[in-house]
Length: 180
Image (tube, rainbow, N blue to C red):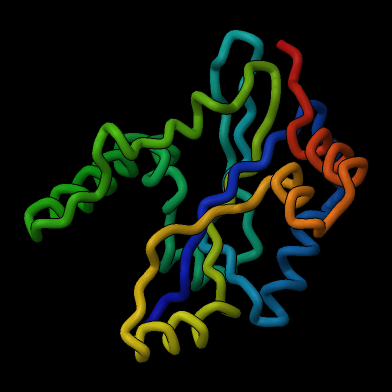
């Protein structure tokens, strides 16, 4: 099975008010073959920094069995307890034995540390189905990915894509502070 480009997205919520809207939108994107949610977690971090996590997903039962607890393995959260941590350690050891460096300390992204105390986060591991034909065309042309990333609304002012007022409003929404 060829897999499309995969992205880990961490969304913070100061006072979450989940009404099924996010899951519904993810379902719509899946139905349109735009993305597939490989795994998703809701993480609650209390005022002292203690974590509580639960799976969020629109995967079928077969997909859930196939993909398992991938987000937990990526971010170092032993979501499935000791067996989950052992499975993640085994997968990492197998990759290292094959000469693959999974992570190094300089590249590490401590997702859990970045979640502010007294808040919640949705952590989504998604496959971008829409990008598969583009990626394959780039590969056939001898190309390769050098870098990628989301662009801040503030950076869009300089190229005239949005106004300073629009950028400030979007940026403040995206960077809403979470009080502790």
